[in-house]
Amino acid sequence: MSISEVVAVHDSINGYETTAKHPVDYNSYPTKTVVTPTVTTLPHSYKDHPVVITTRHYPDEIEWTLTGSGAAAGVSCKGGPYGGHYGEQPAEPCALKAGDYTLKCIDTYGDGWHGGYMTIDGIMYCNDFTSGHLMTKPSWASS
Image (cartoon, rainbow, N blue to C red; front, side, top):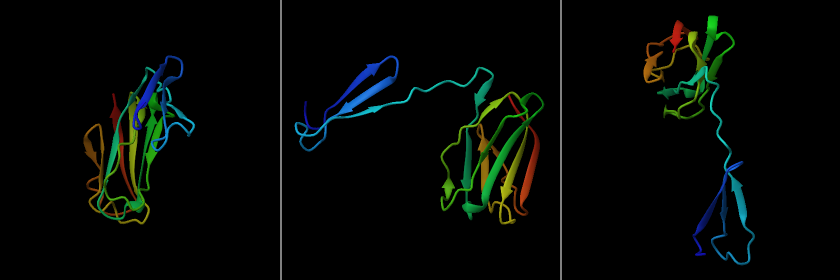
């Protein structure tokens, strides 16, 4: 085995198990085993909807919630604040059932999102949130 070689072993019960030797002197160091977790799928009645937040100013003030009603009662997602992270944030998965939802864009200071916005399934929301603590978008529908 060369110094940089990695051996991958498939384990059908636990996923993939990767064993790597220490890169300096692999003969005198123990091996380290890392097991990759098994990914489970969402229940068949749920669908993942990626939520992407883009901040322009004051990301530590930006928060949001998406709350289901009717057939989607009890289902919700939320995010933020985003600390000192400016620009497009990593996508946040949001597992939703088909139904109606209320989207709340929240600014903890009370002066809107300063040009920030969010996208859900690639559709932009809250880009017109320019003042206040809260902008509500009722009847957002998931399919």
